[in-house]
Length: 143
Image (tube, rainbow, N blue to C red; front, side, top):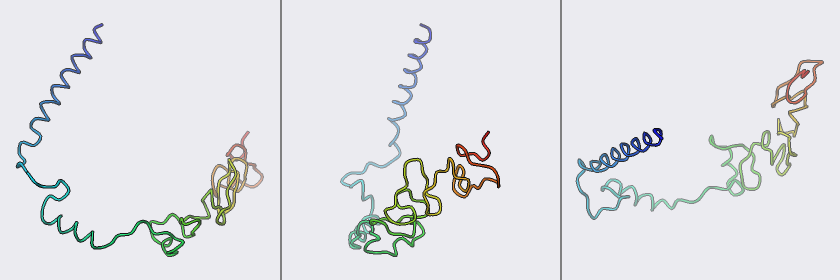
C-alpha cells in the first residue's frame, strides 16, 4: 500500500515539473507570424529554390548505370537484379547472380558452406580448423 502511495506522489511531482517546464520553453524566442516552418529566413528560401531547379532523380539503378556499384558506399561491385551486391558474401547471390544458399548455409568467398561442419569455414568464413581436427557445431575439435 505504501508503495502505491509513493509511486502516485512521484508521478504527481514529475507531472507538475514537466508542465512548468513547457510554459517557459519559447519565452526568450521572438514571436514569428506568417512564416513557414520550413523556410525560416531568406538564406534557406534561396537554398530551397536552388534544390528545386536541380531536378533531382530517385535512386540510380545499376542496370542503367553500372558504375554506381563502384562507389565507396556501395554494398558490392556486382549488379544483380538492379541492386549492387557482393557475390562473395550475399546469401541470395552467392558466387553469381541468382545463386541462393540453402537454409543454414553462409556465403563464404562465393561458395555456399555450412559453417557448422565445414573445416575450412568453421563457425565463420575463413576460420580453418587445424590439420587433423574436425568441425562440429561451429567449433574445431568439439568433444
